[in-house]
Image (tube, rainbow, N blue to C red; front, side, top):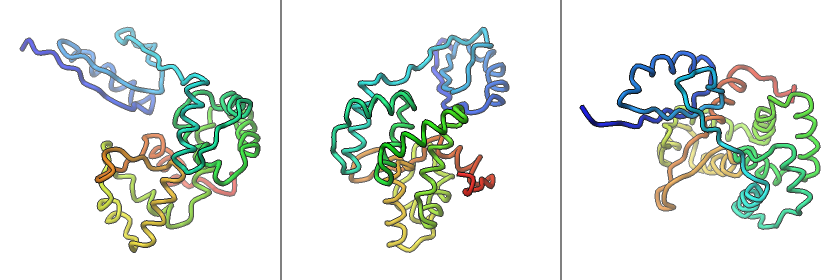
Length: 221
């Protein structure tokens, strides 16, 4: 066949995924082409052409942060010095910005910044883990139950009825738990307002699997 195909494989999260998959795909790369997204470097594979995705600029990060503040009903412009301080700690990582902005409803920005600086100084590679742990600690038991029940979510998401059935929660408790997850940016929505679909970011699912279900001790922070 003369047809050519583009095959997209998203979120290669682990080194083992990459090490096994890339060599297996090589014989299939003609006539097909593969687009892989990964937080792991693929520089050691000569057959792979890399296109690094740059973080958001300070200006774009501020626009995202203020958009998230407005979405959470806190439509206040960030002072330039505050945004610069936040950017210096977490950079232009969109998901980290969303999670931290959501936490501004629980803690003053000065406290968040101090905690983030300490976490980055102690273990910079664990900054996302620290941010997720802080978000998890704000949830009540019902919201935690709902979030864990959503691990089987399809990548494209599911509707609200699917979420309700998976949660096994009474309607009022389900509604309150869902609001918590949305307020903490631990659950994403897509699609029209009449029939939104709900989905977990891959990093959120990874946190639940590798830390919460693996027995992370909340007393350790």
